[in-house]
Image (cartoon, rainbow, N blue to C red; front, side, top):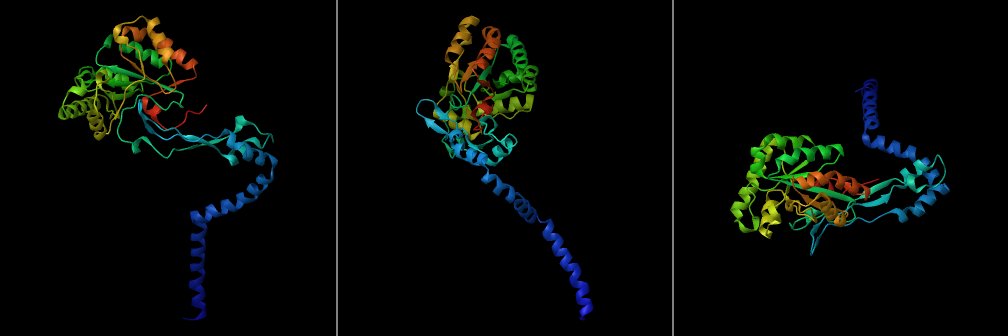
Length: 319
């Protein structure tokens, strides 16, 4: 091949290789890093950057691993906080002054998660999380349900409704109304038996039939199981786990089935409510009349009312 043809072939080939290299995401990332390096070097010489770097540890919080408590069983993990020094510096740089309100944080995941633990009930969220969940078990009480839904909507609160499968099948309009309100829906067995007294086979049947009934009516796949009357044994929890459901109980009880006055019910709850609380209730007249007072007073305690899934999430609630 003569020299002319070699040059004719080589030039396009070199151009193609050069274009491919320039378009490579690795090259683009490298170029970006090179551009940022002078700024990073300059920022690290800035006394403000040094101040943020030296104070960062004061504001950081270590993550909390999920664990099994001897009394409260499963305690979910909780993310820690780490100061993003570069982002915080950029936010404070225009004023040139350290301002803790302008610190930017990254959440740090714990090392042990719920999925790493043996199956056990969850009675409450992590006590470091300023969250409260309303567990509303529904097997009756249709006459009060709509009013409760209206109150929740008015205050922009999402609850977790645990539906009996038989009830969902017989009351599809109300079940759909709960789902359309953006509330979380869980499994409350099919026929409301005492789960600790029934066989493993019957336990599976109760849970599966309820999952199917709820999904048929609302399209929702349940993630949580609340055993009726809090009745269970270890096998119940294991069976629910095998069906991809966590078992949920409560740490604060309205005892609304005893028909207390709204004053008695609200005092009972507000005296015991705590960060991470799961508050058990039903669609009763007592709860319906108390719900607005509970919501406003719980919020005054700087507690956020969220679903069970949000409560047990490791994600921190950032103000």
